Length: 167
Image (cartoon, rainbow, N blue to C red; front, side):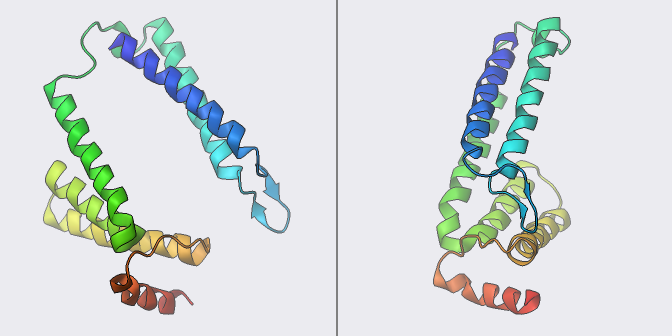
């Protein structure tokens, strides 16, 4: 556990630095009259991730967290099973984007994750699986005016209905 914690913190810190460097190819500040530049969110979120990695490394060095004091293996059988089930769900989510749209893939992933992995109630599962993709649609397509992948032609009636709602 001890070795895994510092290794992952180091790997994520390097990834954060790379993302910060790449996002600086675009403006990272606020552009008067236009809003945040193209690199604004990637840069500042990566900086937050880097600061979190530094805090994890500091706590590891001081032995503050239980993982920093543990010589146990990083994952047991349950941990590996969870990684495979969640990772498989994420792979399925990415594969479904071009078929059922970004929002359809989000709905299906939430349904899978909440009902089958989390064993949550049908009310919570269906509620979040339906409401969250609609809210994300309204945020990205309506407020931010950023179009997400719409999948195959059979998803178009949903988008027509939603576009009529926001425009």
